[in-house]
Image 1 (spheres, helix red, strand yellow):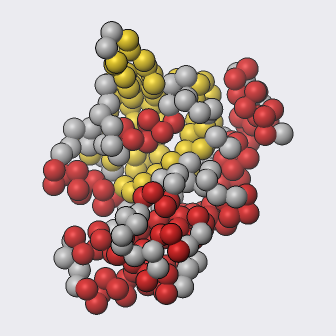
Image 2 (cartoon, helix red, strand yellow; image 1 turned 90 degrees about the vertical axis):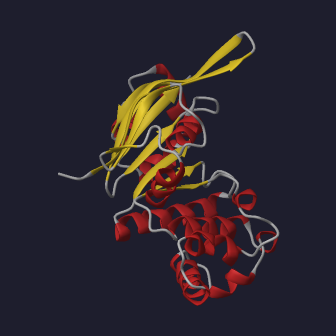
Length: 252
């Protein structure tokens, strides 16, 4: 039986503005096994990114629990949170915005390695290895974010996420800003890494075709609630809910 890497239990997020409140995520639970890919799909505003941000502590949750490798990380702070980020890394939608424009890609990729005490020489070597692993040449370490394409920048962002050798990559619409051909290349890279490194992937997107090609399981979200969950082929070929049928029809 596969090892359970991540468990999210009864996640809830309520945003409050003045006297108004809005429930963005409502009682969402799921689990992710080692080496598996879980897709979370739904229209814009369905709560997908809010879930990713709660799991990674970029957003406080209203209710719920997150367990990483058997350890409750719901309320970790400081040193414990830094340890958590060594296990779990996020790849964002807009790669250019996730790098500091004043620093080279190599600086960005190597930052976490320097933070854990790796020497300058060893960091440089590791950064070059990571770039090559992600389909770029070592020279990209010297380039600035504005000097590369969106797809190249996203590969560099994946290299940065892999630097600390995490167990989980959370990809929040990580390919939606790229054109279709580049999307496919970046997803194939992620899938290759999943197979080779036994990485677990949480793929947040709105594209059911991508989910069907790459995920082991899919969660369909509508207005913050899970409406369907199961194998991608089952959900896409035999959707049970009207909302899922509409999602499927929109891509076919």
